[in-house]
Length: 342
Image: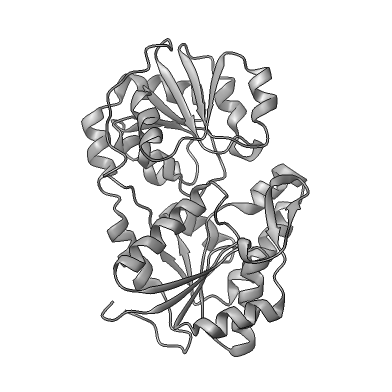
């Protein structure tokens, strides 16, 4: 990008939420600003909010049309990107439609599958809404070829690739000092919630110690039920890198994530990954030396422990840079007036 841009980001996922979407956009905003771009974020903290009935840890914003319009007009953006399909995303989408502005969107999570799991909402209903939401987007950003193919088969269009990165100044191998846990150490990092399929990890029969890094609505219940697992709560930055580095294998049980940022963070710390052969892991775990994908998570763990190679993991993770991701993001943005930025 040859000149600084005024970029408006609309997102229903923002601090204090802790998840891959928030971390991705916090890092992306930081890199955009480093390059001299002005970035304004419309986020839930700016509005009244209510807790989601079936997920009370996360609050939904209640943005008024007047509030959203005032924020957008005051910033006067050249680019509008809508990151989520929630109330803020809907409000900004509606504004752009009224003004006949072009905008881009991103597809971060398989919400139809989440909603089916959490609230019993039929997947077909949710995908109909998602297709409608993204149908007016001039660039629907997706993280992997497999996700793009899956969405194309469901009727989505205008898709462009936007990968993810890892901060190699933070996520790097650290000394192994967890001598209190019997090895091998099997590590999970992420939200402690049902949609992450975490019970598939907690019920693994492999020997060793299962360690959970993260928090969420199911932590208290599962901490009681799975006494053989160690629950450490949230870890950030170098503390999270320390957890990765002390693991013998990183286990990613989710079947609904579209990428899985934690997988490349674990690899950057020299740790192989065990996961299911589903969207996300299929495009990330592409070498037997960096992990194993299998319909049996127990088998995936066993094979990853046998074949995992630290040097291969490090080399694989170094392919994912935030600089490259920022280049892709800027190339995908569209001007509100209609000209594609390049």
